[in-house]
Length: 258
Image 1 (cartoon, one colour):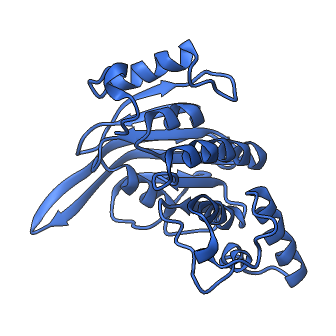
Image 2 (tube, helix red, strand yellow):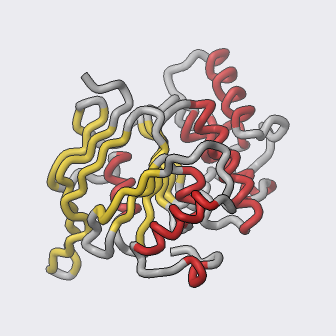
């Protein structure tokens, strides 16, 4: 029997109707994500990475195949799957604590306040409970978005390029914070990113999706101890292995993000 929190994607095919034409976006996707695993997904723009995340979170059910969580087919959004987008999408008329608790239903007021405060503390925003989004930096806004996605204790957290809009230094700092949050929460994370170093730094494995129609081209394990050293020989070797799948060499890459 599978452990709770196991995600299985079986023979997934997704097509879009565009101007009376059917366009295949995802083709024969098979994927298993174990409880507590951190999975990174990389691929060129338009290959269907974000579409895959949206189907897993339940935003759309017109596809062939199965997406199963705990052996049950996903049919629509649920609190057992949280998602964080590139844009924090905080409600501007609500404070940090109100945004974090926005989707937290069915709790007594005392429990609700406690849960909200625990998650604000978890993402390092203690002291900013009463602050409105316009006063937050980009990194702080994403922290609030992550807290909001985690407040219902989902079995899986889906991350759709959550750090893509941040400057390079803030992004690296937030990568470290994401890793800490993942370790503390112990739930599975699936992250779509254009940044190969980010994918390797955070992922237990890197899934490479080919150009449209998106197929899983290769899965590369990342058997490195944490925290990871981006300058280590083993890290660089894995990076070169990923880059080869995109017909790039490390010296061509520099800070380029696919």
